[in-house]
Image (spheres, rainbow, N blue to C red):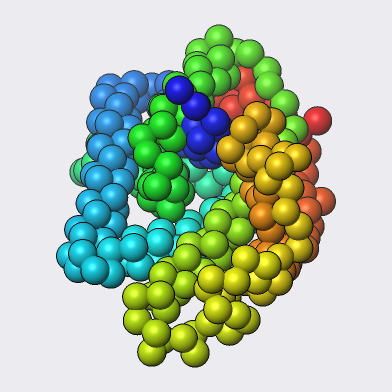
Amino acid sequence: MNFSPALPTFVITLREGVEAALVVGIVFAYLKKAEKTALNPWVYGGIAAGLLASLLVGIFSIGLIETLGSANREYEPVVKPLLNALFSVVAIAMLSWMLIWMTRQAKLLKTEVESAIKTTLTAETGAGWGIFGLIFFAVLREGFETVLFLSARFEQGWIPIFGAAAGIITAVGIGVLLFQWGVKINLRLFFQVMGVFLLLIVAGLVVSALAHFDAAISTLVQLNPQFEPLCIFSQPTVQTSSCLLGSLIWDTSRALPEKQFPGIILHTLFGYEDRLYFLQAFGYIGFLVIVGGAYLQTLTGWGRTQPVSSGGNASPQQD
């Protein structure tokens, strides 16, 4: 069985999961410092509810693809790739925003979370629900972004879910190391490395999204020739050119096929295509220049703070 499709979801859920684990750990540490550990069950409840809500969103998204795709059997080969393309676009937008925004906010994470907890605890009533809501939305936010990515890769089957589960388990393990055992981890370096991987994975998603759009339009033209004007560059049957993607830049399907090792690893993690077209190459490079440039700029503003440790002094280590 080929488990390579699980690699991107592992990277994404690991990074997202560690972010959620930081929030949860900071909340636990603050409650311990404030001698409010009686509210800990509300934290666990928020975690469980956030994971459940993320799962329900994933089931709904996949069900929507299946339902709409099979609603009209004749155009099912058009609808499914089109829906995958649309989910990919949303996932690209959300993951890119998360990558840049979270990097900018990383140095303020501890302060913002503790401020929110302090405000919640000073309320006369509803402290438990306030803690629950804080954790629930932190977990749901990270889970929702992962679910969008899984929905965009729905055609790869259920194997990516194993990667997501492994990423969550690993993130939980990192959270335990940080806040229960007091292990110091260079979170700045961790997020930088994960950020670069995520950047390349999302750039690969750009390539896949364009391929889905092209497949949908090409199939539509084949089913109904009156839509032929939608093919900007060529007839969909021409092998050296694509309906929407332009001319074929390279064909390495014999030397390095994307469905065999090591091409499958390059395809899964970095968006490698053994048949790459002009618009795909342009989109890949353009994404890395625009979003990658913005991400690199955020790294220069990530200041130095103290290392993560157990107790009430948890914050990202920047050295």
